[in-house]
Length: 261
Image (tube, rainbow, N blue to C red; front, side, top):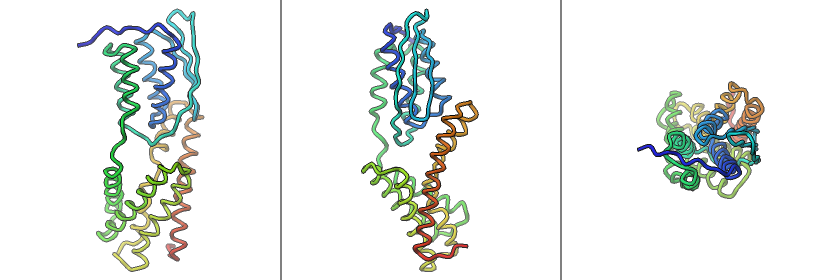
């Protein structure tokens, strides 16, 4: 049953709510267009006017009341966590519930607090699923069963290293370099020991789990929507991570003395 929305009256509270809301959207991997649409949906329900400037790591929000007599501005900084589409979806769902009158301002604040405290998926489940997914890529590229098993092991070890280094708050670029290096060294066993008939495919697909696909997709989406600064920033971040990945892969090939070409 749809309830009548109880409109908030304090512009400062509304602005701070929006600041936290968009910060978590950006930190969870949302595109600029999603942030704009979700905020506009909530602003229409609460009868306020919201102006938002999205930068690569900061968001400036200005909220006006319906009569444009009072305003409040705030600048928030996004803390870039791992992309979490579950949190992303919950935040979008919250915007629709507010728009449909199913949550007043206080209930919206409470739900937002619960959403951002959503625990991540079990790391061991993610580890196994990522390993299976990357092994499946090896199969799609016509790798034989030995190469698929080798890629599974290389991905599992590399991704476990990635999780451990993230817990230690290591630099993300150094993480990509180290994980690509470790995975490529393991996958190069197909060359060193003559395992299987597709060693090149095993080595090439062993680092695919590190490809920053989401930043690349978000960069294109932001570019098409006219957010060129955010698009360029995301594209450059993704390109740097790809370079670190390639450097790690090359380091593994070099240290194992593999003549790939």
